Amino acid sequence: MPSTAKPRLLIIAAVNPTGLFGSQFLVRQHFDMFKKAGNTIRLTTPKCHGEFKRNGQIDEQSGPSLRKIADLRKLLASSEQAIEEFKPDLILAHNYEAGLIAKSLKRRTSIPIIYIPHGLLEKELPTYYSNPIKKRIFPIVGKILDRRIFRNVDYVVTLTEPLREYIGRKYKFNHISAISPPFEPMGCPESIKIPRDLDAIFYSGNPYGYQNFESLIDVIRAVRKRNSNSKLIIAANPPKHKWQKILTNLKKAIRCEIHYPKTLAETMALASRAGLAVVPRVDPFGFPMKIHLYVNCRLPMVAYDCGWPGLVDGETALLASPGNARELAERILELPRDEKLGIALSSNAYEKFAKNYCATHISHKFHEIFNKL
Image 1: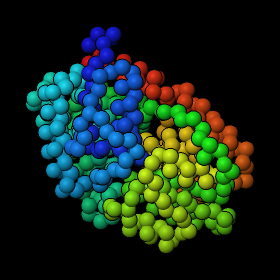
Image 2 (image 1 turned 30 degrees about the vertical axis):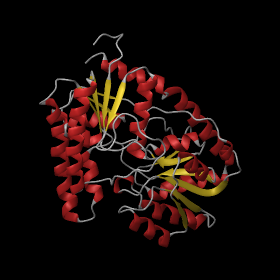
Image 3 (image 1 turned 90 degrees about the vertical axis):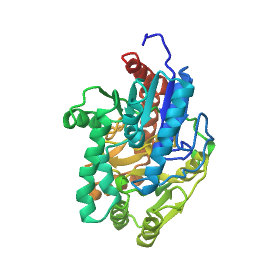
Image 4 (image 1 turned 135 degrees about the horizontal axis):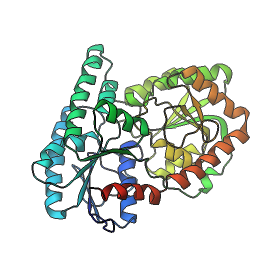
């Protein structure tokens, strides 16, 4: 493809990009980024074609289920229809559902497929189960599915460098690059200029297993032993799925507030009440999109050191050894004692993300790959 061309892009995703967290937010960011870059672009999901409404709620359940099989059939049908009508130059397959239909698409078209995994099935699938037998079986199932995807796509773009390195080494896949998610700087709303409760800890997202969410109980309990005023504020999607039980148990175990915001503005207003944000996830292969929310809210972050782009210990965040809940609690306790440190961390993070991960910069990296295909 000539370097001056702006390819027509078809984004295929199983999620409707109307939610506030995770994969939904990332798909929406990529759609907006390429549209602003001048690409003619179309989005297709099992329930959405073309444009979509903003700031809605997700309506799909994460993790494996029988419903996902039916959704894959719908996704394949809508993708085939979009290819015929839209005639794209390139296909961007977001996450494993879109990757799994790549083989079927390859039978019908020679259009290059770029796979954008949000994680690795080999690592993610076992986190949805507590049964020991299933925890042993599903890593094997995940490896089989991951290998099938890599055999049927032309290029892979990961969100983190650790995942790029792992896929290249473990699956012997060489057509691969790591490109961070685009960061969309937001102005500083008046709502986040109000005085913060330095003892309040904020978490946004849903309590899936891969988020290491339940470890928050141990972390908050460790914090409370040293700071009895500490409290947790959670912003999640409505509890209509299986995480309701986890949230109920969490509320019984520790003192916390659980909210279900419907818009990004409501989420940012909740975040504005806290003195810091926590990222309990320990998986270096996925990128927690909540990091962008925290940066825009000027919230200092405490997280595990998983190699996520933009997080530098003592400069843009306070980091702890992966999985060490006691150390994470110690880092959390540093911030209420040093308000200037929190201000410095949040300011540095905003400046770094706005400069190094802006949509223009990330879009340019993608177009360098497009020109090779």
